[in-house]
Length: 88
Image (cartoon, rainbow, N blue to C red; front, side):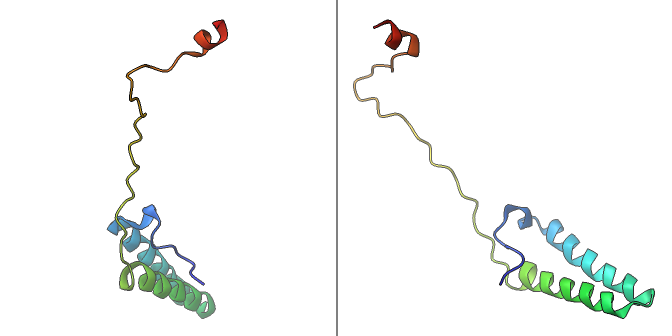
């Protein structure tokens, strides 16, 4: 089960990935300093997991480009407007 989707567009920027890992490890340090090792281990585990997913196995996918759709107008006529259709 994957908790972080590395193909999400939010993770393309390096500073976002660094901030996520830094906040997790920073919070782990805060928890250890204040004397709560249980939450420190959990926050450190979250930091280790996010580092593994966002840096170690990160393979950025190229952004998807939308295909330009052009109408098939072989005879050169423009489509009739709704008012013209109702009048006929």
